[in-house]
Length: 269
Ligand code: ACM
Image (cartoon, rainbow, N blue to C red; front, side, top):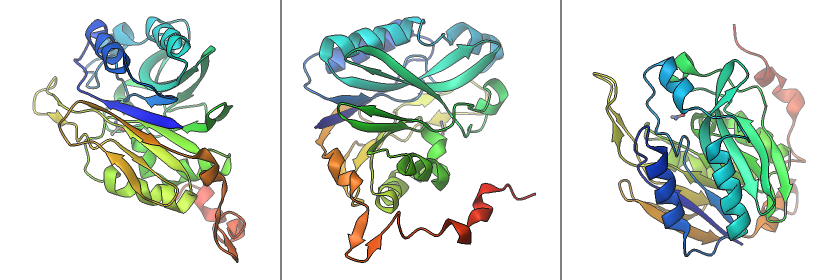
């Protein structure tokens, strides 16, 4: 099964340009699943609630989700992509899943990063896994990776592949992701972006690229450079993620002892 990501530098506020770029990048590629970055069509650094309101869309009725659904239909592949969502009176940092039959579902980012907290509501969907023809797909968004509970929850729910739209600025994720995959025996596809945004005085954001696909054995199958716009593809076998045995006597899920770490479900006060 061919999975890929498209790493690029979206131009803030220019949906037409960003969507055009994505359409052109996938024009001649043969894929089963594509992951695009967080806020891939809008850019990342919002500086006011008005801007968020202007660029957010309803899901699935909004323009971007409709376009992705149509692209999935035409190309026959699944897409996971991040976008700001207007939902009733709230805004969420969301990711949609579309497939050959159109729109499938949406996830709202659980762990908001930095100034996202000024503009977006913390996600209320919980982690979700969809059983598709190309395997069981779970989604987390960018900073969710920092909380091991995110990928653990998705893996325990049966995810084979964790799609991870991102706009990473801290340096740690590309090193950590293979370990997250190893400890949960899942595939992960981190689609990060490149470039810089300097929309707020004294607060320049440099995105670190290095999008990657990692395997249940903790191997990096492909990794993008820090600063290049690229679409990279890796062949994966989702069934491999269903084998949680690492020796004849150890199955990493059966061996878990939740009663010994039940305190992780409580917040330290
Ligand atoms: C992030 O969550 N966009 C770092």
